[in-house]
Length: 371
Image 1 (cartoon, rainbow, N blue to C red):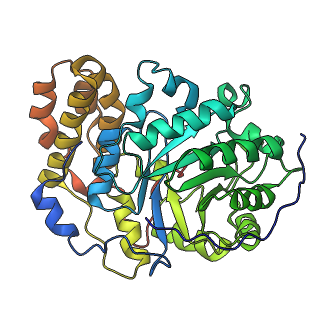
Image 2 (cartoon, rainbow, N blue to C red):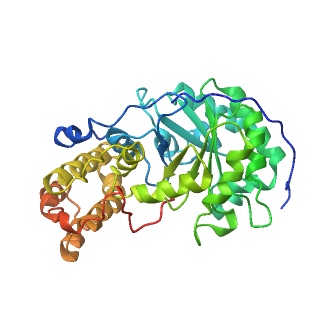
């Protein structure tokens, strides 16, 4: 994705304290999806959010295959990535042809953030995203994630280090602020733009809200008005209807969908097409759905190895079967099955009932709130 840098509006300090391929029969349904457009986009952008333990390489490949403007890796701890801690580099693994994939880095030290960014770029990353929005205590207690919104000078120093370390675009994901007394996302966005960041994503909650209540899309508009770079709205976007509402309230250039894509990797493409005024592809059902799930399952086993892959795959299988209305006894049998061949042999049976699926996002919405 090409993102233009707009003139800097200056900065002021406030509130500083406190690989699965898509089967041919499914791919033929999505050939009408438009390719990624250059800036300015002809339609709102639709991104896949980074989700820990979910947006791994197999899932990102699946989502990208259906159609997405960008997919983002799971959050990767910068120091652990550089020091090659087992499992960390796998979370960010790309593939050199993944043109619209971003690797998201978290950390509190400029040295490690810069080195991790250089490593990611050398491994094929086309975009580096800096996490300044994760609310998890294990992250904020280490002064990373959304804790950085309590010290904008330090946040700016990390951004400066990453931008200076790589030649690819750098983006930032943040929240509205630390708490309701400190909505400083507009200022952080201004400072990020001043340091050379090309796009920011804002989750419409504060850190102290975690995922409670509803995302405040209107509050994101203040960030949009504060900068000249694109702003992406995030939070509670679970289909085309919610995406349209978020865009109208925020004035953002696009949306980022997280949990709404769990068990529905085609969701991003459906929303993207609906926002562009096109006719969304039908949700895969029956045999076509079973084929999508089979490819995803096999990709997870190949990526992680059989033992770990079986464990990782269970949550995804659970979401697919929930969406398909799989009877509880059959669902339990598949989720407790230890032999991949037997799981694969029962997928078509488990996913046969398409009538109980969640509605497609061409006006409907999913039951889960989006991250």
